[in-house]
Image (cartoon, rainbow, N blue to C red; front, side):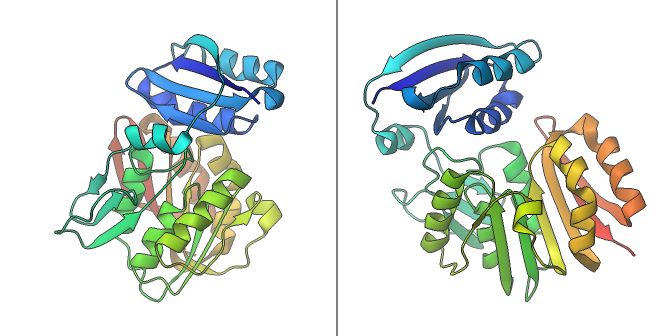
Length: 276
């Protein structure tokens, strides 16, 4: 079966948004490049109406231009290896693929083979979430990773000493990939499939991690608050710096107090603490 190839030029800050949107409508592989993303789906899985709706939604804001083609066969591992470089989050953690050597000088190391899944640490949101995790005591804590993607944040929680880590994602591709990455990093937990309302994790948690997007975060904020222990921490990212006020306004009435924030490439990340 042939793969359809879509070369999408777009603004950098929209790359992961488009990856997330397209993965929801049947696209299973992505390559990021300097101009945007290359997206791939089996011809039999392609939904033209849904695809056109996604492109139309972001075309103006993301300055999208598009080229379509057919790729008969793709060696995804080979293509991915050409486009993946290790990442350094201060001296906290070195994130590498299995084909990269270890590098000394870091407190922790994560091995991630994302196979086109979301969340390699390259994007500003994941980078900032990892950095914020380094500021929170995870030792002996119970941690929930919402929309786990490759599982990188759950793995970080494990390395920081969490006693229990739960993770889930709505994409079965991410779940399979995340469990592979858990195995690579010594986690015995398994990633679950579904939304937070479907998975229904049972609180209370010391730390909740959610790197998704603004609309989902706003919709699920009350659920996160309900799952947190008093004095527990909620780490959020996946939205722009100008959205911080909206997130904070949603969190305050739920007893969540903003205690730290950062921004990178106009993407924001927050640490909130449950006060009541």
